[in-house]
Image 1: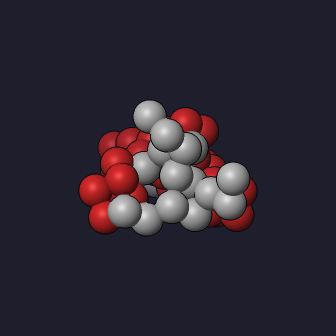
Image 2: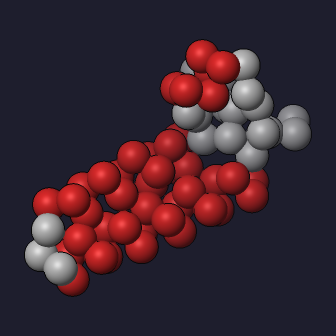
Length: 60
């Protein structure tokens, strides 16, 4: 897996993931589990759709 998620993109994904998970916990809804997707893609710095579409926001 080659990193394809840049610093700004990564930060936004992690924050969005935490917010979605927190909202799911607050509203006691399993929909908060969707927050794992942006959280994991931000933590791993790899996004499968980006790979398929040839997008790379990493400046390295």
